Image (spheres, rainbow, N blue to C red):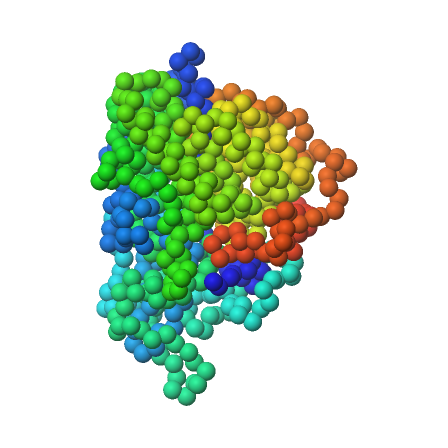
Length: 604
């Protein structure tokens, strides 16, 4: 297995287009919105626009129809069972140097290499808070270009260039202990990988790779024999070695139906449930039931209750074509669906029958069993970054919906007593996220998972809003820190729903959060997440944040996070490793907060 270490020379300078983030993973209070004793009264002026956005989103989702993971196009999972969820590792790229006239295959749209984790898909695929649209992955419309004639036209036209690639580290020691700088995630590597020639539009992903024929006089050149003159994509997937490029999505991952199906299904589910809460129209419950039957129950379309083939590592050898712990992250949409089920069940509509309830509980119980017993689940559980956070959130949600309240509470307490303890430094920085190539995005993404866990915890009577990391920081401190960071080319809208949630949980006596929201997204009150956060917080209001804690309350001596016990590096994402030395500046605060030109912190 080729290991990629996070070092200054690894990172690429990404050109990102600011975009509206997708509807994030969230949790709507069942006690508040689903209570028959004290029903939610809609139509108030403060939430009217947000209500309309939710109902509009549900109606548009119905028009697009329902998808299933069983409807994979011409690509089957390694098991051959079309009911198995399948996705490919998004940051993996083929690294072939074909001999002769063969061609390597990349596939996909040239301008579609953004990170799918928090929904920052291209505009055509991305839900829109402005209108309330739900997830929509235009998989059917995204043609995969395989024509050699097209490739030759592109090469002849001159509309291509060699891309900047991260330098290979074949001669490096196993661990890079060199400390990063404050600009770690923004240091471009100007070295070209000379074993690969890529064609691209601008700085984006290539469609195909023209073969590179080694010089007859160059005895050091090495190449991989091409099995055919014109390779089929599937041959590339199983023959080429793949390498990781953090934050750079191989666009051919969108060839698969599974990720879009889960996203569509989960977003439609929560919209249907909330539209029923708002309107009390039984048609939305009927729609939810049909979606549940399609995705979880019906023999022809159901998803098998596991993620064995999530984020598959492509390539030759024993490790090729196997799922990874990172693939469980793809299942976070089940949290929205569980939330939708619990909201509807609390209001006792006739359409939610005992048979439906029993079948859903059976699926969730089997999925929960797989998460806790599989080798992939056991590894995801211990990850110190967003993977561990969203694993805990999924597991707590599935336990909650099957009635295992104590089990859900145990999952939450275990996470906050263990993995959470090393996630936030004394300054509020999240080192395991800040070290990535897109630090602002990943800070927000992990916070998304933490906030979901905190809201689920409220359902089982646990307050984790006031829970502190071993360095004295809370979820609020992490949000406050991220508000002070200049997002550069990344999208500040990712942070807005999280600030709304934190404002609800901790209060906003100084008006700092309200000022940030108005400045960052003036129409935030018309978005679904504004409605979701109307439930009164059950958290104990925090009176002091990181800005007011005394120095003597903070740890004075740095120690490596416990995940490093016995290991010199830790796998954060598939084939992506980090050392303690690389994280140390972020824990100590020496990596610094980016300031504006006038010397002040953004949104302070």
